Amino acid sequence: MSTDIRETHLAADRRESRGTAIVVGASLSGLMTGLTLSRAGLHVTVLERSGPSPQSGAALGLVGVDLDGESRLLDGSNRRAPSLIAIAAGGSSAMHSWSSVHARLRIAAEADPRVELRHHTVVADVGQDADAAWVTTSDGDTLRADVVVGADGHRSVVRRGVAPHKPDATFAGYVLWLGIAQESDLPAAHRLGRHQEGPDMMSGGDDYFVGYPLLGKDGSSAVGSRQLGFAWFDATRNDLFREKGRIVGDVVRRSLRNDDIPERTYRELEAQAQKLWPQPWRSAVLDRIGRRRLIGTPIAEYVPDTIANGRLALVGNAAHVQTPMTGQGFDQSVQDAEALAEALAAGLPGSTMEECLRSYQMTRLHSARDLVRSGQQFSRSFSGEAA
Image (cartoon, rainbow, N blue to C red; front, side):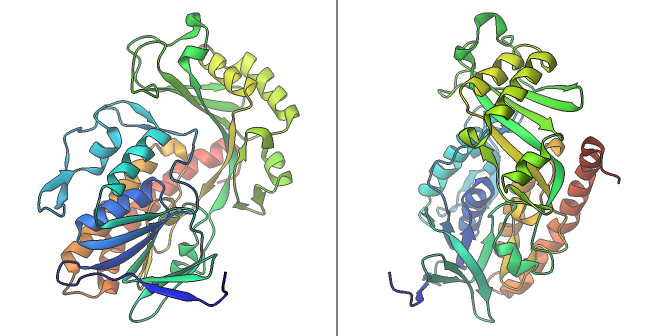
């Protein structure tokens, strides 16, 4: 492939559009931002480094949400569109796997005529001038738009352009072991009660554990058809992640997955699970260990100083990274996506893009900082670090 930079300007019919946007990252926050920016009248290209169906052992609590909620912005037909939470919930107020929520949001984005998804596209750099913002891909392509939004997680590339003085999220001092077991694979005697919807939280030794019932892959809530997800908080194996290059200095690089986890570690976790966790969570953990289907994720944190700079903005974990113990990550991403779109809808075409993004920052920055800091109290206590 030629090394010459091939520039593509994301064209839009200005008679019908408020402009163009590039969203870097098609995880939950990126898909939601693509949808809200479309509703605000922008043509959106969402760039994602992985394929359309990424896997995660995480889960989201959507118990008690408004399944009939509507967006404050109109869709392309000037009708009230379903709210982001209503799309994510898919008609069921329950605990959902991250993958199922992602699939629903992706389907909604694929159906939106003003949203284009491009998978297997790695963004290597971002830039801006007075007239546009742009991304450069690993293939050497340059794509321009009126605004570039980083929804590319805790290792955000876009954050380097927004906050070059503070580009990295830092290690919180502990890891999570994540997994989702199929209830049908567990002994019948070790299944949850019919009416349990919320999570179980418990401590064992120096560790902490959250177990959560999830709808089955087919959406069923029947006993025996559900999924059992868990997050095991562990502050004793940080050295393993440093040895494997998953933590470098105080910066989190990536997770350990499945066969990347040493056999010795699997055996240690198996012995601990037998002692620490009650049923049915013990069986769920042992099932994942036995199948070597476990994810070890070092937890990162990031307290932002800024979430917008010129024509660049950040949402979700690119903007602020809080411990999962806050239980607010998804809700914060929803608020980011909605606030950004509302700032652009209210300001364009009369205001400049920079003015719109300053308005977005004024709306979201302080509450995001406060949430991350509140979670750091747990992190420091659990990891044994001094405040």
